[in-house]
Image 1 (cartoon, rainbow, N blue to C red):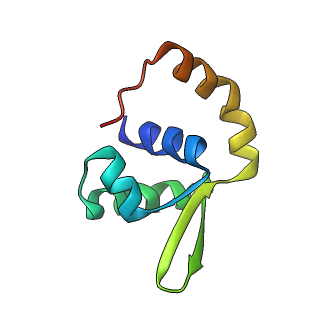
Image 2: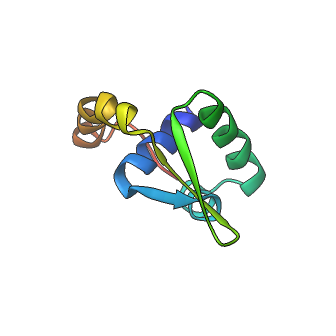
Length: 82
C-alpha cells in the first residue's frame, strides 16, 4: 500500500525528494527510503541527484502504464494519502 501511495504521489507531483514524500505521506524518511530503494531496484522509479538532494520520479514507461489506473484512483478517491 505504501509503495502504491508513493507511486501515486510521484505521478501527481512529477518528482519529489524523500523529505517531501515523508511529509506528504506522514512517514519517517527511513521508511520512505527503503520503499524507494525497492522501486528503484525494480526500475519503476528513477533517481536524479541535484546537489545533495536526490529527486525521484516514475520511469517514463511506467508513468504511461499507470496513467489510466491513477486517473481512476484520483476520480474515485480510493487511495487515502496521509
